[in-house]
Image (tube, rainbow, N blue to C red; front, side):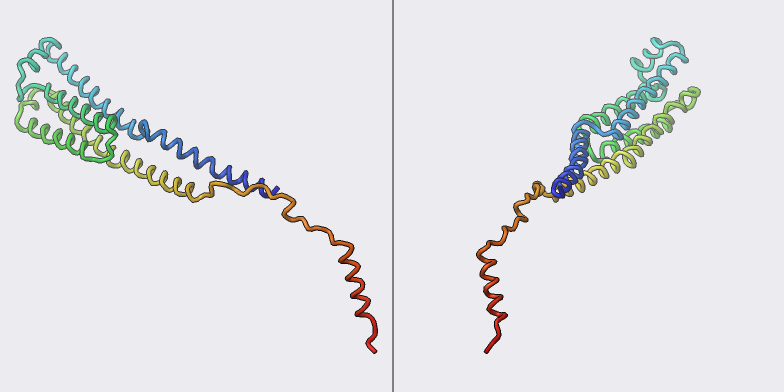
Length: 217
């Protein structure tokens, strides 16, 4: 009975550990929740900048006419088309690095953020966007803020949490490896069996007892 209890306890203790390892390996093959959130925010960055650019095209005289001016007749000092292309570049680079290749380093986000920051600062200083109304302020500021939010999200949320999950996985796996693979089987009653004393032995013991009780002359 005790051996059965110990065996069942061992199975109970090992089953959740194995389940956690299998679930972690399953998540590792696809993508973690925090990394999925980061990729979703990168997609939001592209869609939000695109929406603002389309609104700017409509406000300034119609989409077709403004597309001709900003794309076909591109002018660095007046066009917002390069800010839209900058958002497309961030989306393509970050999704390729952190969703497709599943990179676990910050160098990709550092490159995209550095390029975005440098380009926007130069464009605001050199170009004439600030003289073109509210969108001349809004599009560069929104693009700048979203790029740095992505950097913060990856550096302080995604990479530390995945590193912690990796450490916990290794500790759980090491604990599982240290457990015995085979648990002791049920103890049979034959191990504690003692054979009964023979009658011959008992007769000899009685004779020896009588001899000892005889008086010495």
